[in-house]
Length: 331
Image (spheres, rainbow, N blue to C red):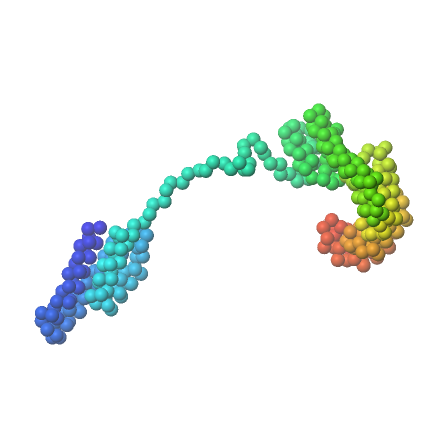
């Protein structure tokens, strides 16, 4: 640091001498040459001193030294004054502020706290844990929680598998999930039946009957109905679907539902007619074609099945049925 200051003061003296020589000796060639030499030495000394006198975060090394030299050499006197002003400003007046120490904030009330573990598990992981007899109770309970949070056939099958577990607690939790699902659907059905009794408008009655048909179908679709009640739920769903069509007219969702009910009951011809009628009423092909294909397969009408998929080859890119369509279109 002291060497840098000494170099800086030496540069100031050289610059002062470069100014005084022409004033004292006149504008002779020797005086002008001496002035230029002193100016050059002073600029080089400034280029060496100034970068080291600036704060560490403003040091630029060689490029900054070249910039200082160019500024002071081509702008005599004023370049020196400018460099002194810059050094004073950045060295003494503009000190770098220090950031306070980091500290941790208290946990927010809605954040996940210790002891509460979120269940993140796919269907495959849940199946694996529930089917492994050596799996711990905690692992099986996590699988049940994951299955209970997702509706659908696969979740119901997982729960049904858990009802046969050797652990009493696992069985109780699985039965509890089944009971809650059944109660939710039953509550919806009871509310709709009450609304149906109070309704006096045919159109409104038709809408309520359609909702009842889908509510009863939920028992079948989610496999919540036992074998002895399966036929009852299918009959109720079909009855309310037909009544909805009588009151409100045909719609493709109800026709699709009737087709699925007939298909589940084993009435293939009625199912095929209902699905075709749903497509005529505007049902999306990607929703209806898989059921038509299933009916044709069960009838062993493979030529018709291949023709159906050939006419809807774009379904090759649809998840689930895509692989089936590709197989039959390439056969």
